Length: 95
Image (tube, rainbow, N blue to C red; front, side, top):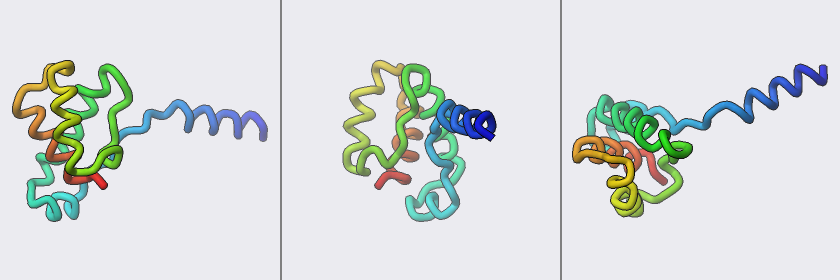
């Protein structure tokens, strides 16, 4: 029993905490295509997750995200389209 509990705790502790998947309701609320939100999430994980744990959209408000992205865009070598997709995603799913 103790080993099973230890294994479960280890698994949960070591599982990466990825940003949530966008839903059709998120896309409708943000008035964007779901595919763009999905691409933004993928880009966020790929570009941001290379140096640190990918941020979750609820870490900032919708108004705070653009400035935060401005600060990181150069360091993570985001081109304009990558930044746009990430911003769509984090703003649509932010608090």
